[in-house]
Picture 1 (cartoon, rainbow, N blue to C red):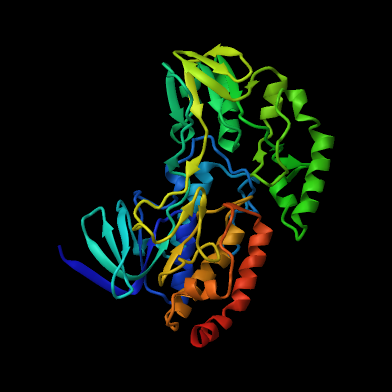
Picture 2 (picture 1 turned 180 degrees about the vertical axis):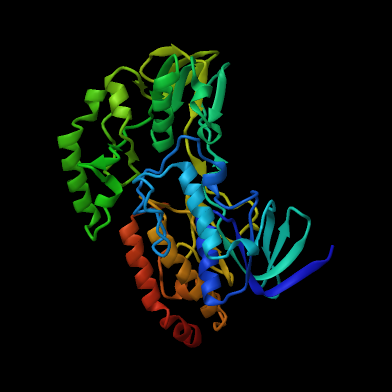
Length: 421
């Protein structure tokens, strides 16, 4: 099989929000690139992975790209359809579409002996590139719960849920306490014969707005996390009260140690008896499910809103370590031992992507140009500078912005470290 060489180009894997942002940054900096997307068009998860009724949980202002605002007529919480249209218009505005090869997956990314990267495509083509930016997302590798016994009804992952009609007139159990779980169980509350929610732990549930303002916009300050916790907890005490009054467990962690769930409907339906809360599942037995408190209920449909794995299945073994949901990359994106490999967009910010992606993408573009001047891989230089590896997949957006600015201020030092050590 012939191998084509694109020695002065970067390959971008994925054309969701992260991949589009990366492409725009490279284009602005004059860095040649090719982009590959397994779907037929741009949008990533907003094209292939969300239910029809989904709306963002952050807000328009905390999700839009700072260089390309959302339309003025968009509501505070745009729909999935509006989000997809926005990303399509972003790609058209910056003329990114002509560089994207659609309906094409990358099946292997491996380093070559001459410090390049060999990509194998689903088309069978093999191409060598100077570098790779991995933007394959984190909402596709399904995590399923494991319980004793077998369920004889229908079981699906929240990724495969599409519309309320599939819940109509059924006894529905949703497993999970995240945003998708709460959206789906609230839709079940409207159309299903019964709607139940199983939670293995206590979660923090925040309304989508406080006093008419999107909750995410109340956290876009330089306020330290400890003060944000006091602030939000005080508001919740006034507006919501004790979660146990709704039949829920008391949270077993501090706010923001895990992502809070942002939903204004769940507590409403709990108080109306339209959603029945349960602790964790203990076992399955046909249509009967037993919970850890000993209660038993019969169900027709179980929706597992149990999240996703971070996965880079096409990346050759030993290139980048993944520890649970954490990619061990310097500055959260730079491969530790190889030149021109960037793993981007795997972490999960507390609210929308736009304010983070634009500066992060611009930093990657500058790192690509800088790496061309260095004898060592960037990851090795950052290791010499004792730059810590990420320990969590959760991002405080304001803290992440501060870290991006700090990284940019250090760029001048990297060539010096490269020469001295």
